[in-house]
Image (cartoon, rainbow, N blue to C red):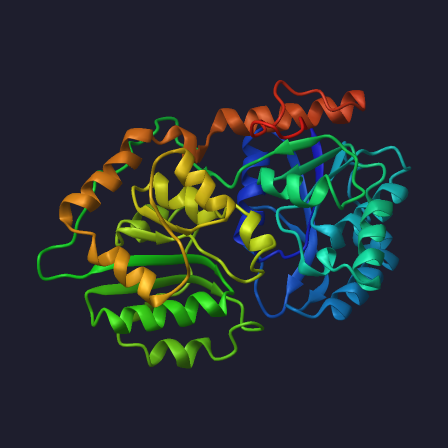
Length: 398
């Protein structure tokens, strides 16, 4: 059985829980260690015991750097009693520093996998600070055996032209973890009753001020013909007034956190559309990512709304699904929904149903395949896996 030390930047992040569950389903033995983010509790993962390395805060880079330095100093004590792993996975840059320290404690011969699913804006700065941070990433990542990322646009726009990371790349999309043996069908279109509004779901990590303001102004402009349902984890460092803001909204409702993947069918079943737009790091990370909500929404038959010029827009256009706005404006949204009637919605949702559920889900066999790929790295020192990440026409092979 493959032994994995998984180092997490935020133990409360639901994505960490999903990744650990996937690795366990693939028959790996996982030790999870990482930071608690503020007062957030760690995500429950069965009987797995986690090792807390300290506390970090959102949007406080210096504080997080200090927490990482302290964790590295005390790592020998924190990992006392942990059996030497076959491989270490570092989720995000800060954990790459911890991974290198952990490997040195285990004798220096444990391969590291760097899992990077977001490109922080500090890494993209062209000033001295940005260059120094990229140099630190290159130095920490010079010996990694594999880079795991979730979007080809990250590779094309950052890892190839700017990052010093030279490891082979594996594309691991943010698909819905679905471990039942039978794959349920994508639900049929579910238009609202004649006296009910259309509903747009904005679910997941809630950190985008521009989305919050835009959806507020749009829903007010529609005077109740469209409602916005918000669920997930607000990032209060970015949305300090989130709770009071939502209480004042007549056509928006915040319905709290949810379990992923357990609650996805229920929460997406309440809406017809998925807000798949993020302006948090506009023109950079937000333009390149393929968010969880794209896969979740399509898995459960909701129609995605994206914005032109983003990887999300290219993704859904390539599958001939969803709607793409030319600009992020109230006028653009009003124009879109003025053209949506029951027939157009049913046609749009039907196109998603026709895609099937398989391409939106990460299944038990995918879990086994992932662990098999990691085992090949751990036991041979090479990145031996059956397929490379696909590239767009004209892009470099990875």
